Length: 253
Image 1 (cartoon, rainbow, N blue to C red):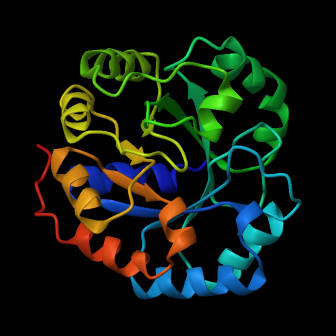
Image 2: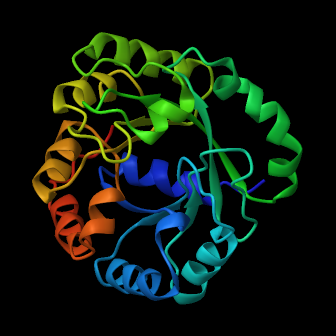
């Protein structure tokens, strides 16, 4: 199985380069506005597209991924909210295990059911320790997962959860305040987690301005994911991309 996308993530981390991923929810785009998003992303030199959402009730997933692949070379990674969100047209898949909750179904149960389909898809599979952090408002992800998020001020819990995920073999750690979060994950929590793991750290949820993306990167985030804010104002892509690329490069020894 190929590992080109994962290798690019780890290489960028080792080189101290920060990455920007634009999250596209197939339920919230159509042929017209996805073309605009792709154009803006290419112009801003966005590093990755994440495609998926907590629900994805439309059948637009395949078309959405194909549109991206047809119009640009930006790697497309599936961010599935359920086992059915698999598209063979993508480059890779975040195989998410909800390590912050105590919902056995989202820790391993759904993976057992989806394993044959995922294996047959031919996608690059990236085992990802998924941590939901309290963003100050009930989000789709916390409701769907039926799991309590990590309290926003409990940095030690986040740190220990990430360490456990890495030692269990997770290749990525993804901390998410959820779509539409009132507040983003604090820099102090990001710093605490980043200092104790070696795998790439992805941060998303509640990032609505370039400055916050910049501060998250300075704190130790390797990949910044923005979706909701871009749905409301697509021009943010350019500003956030510029902020992330302006972070001083700090080579990991």
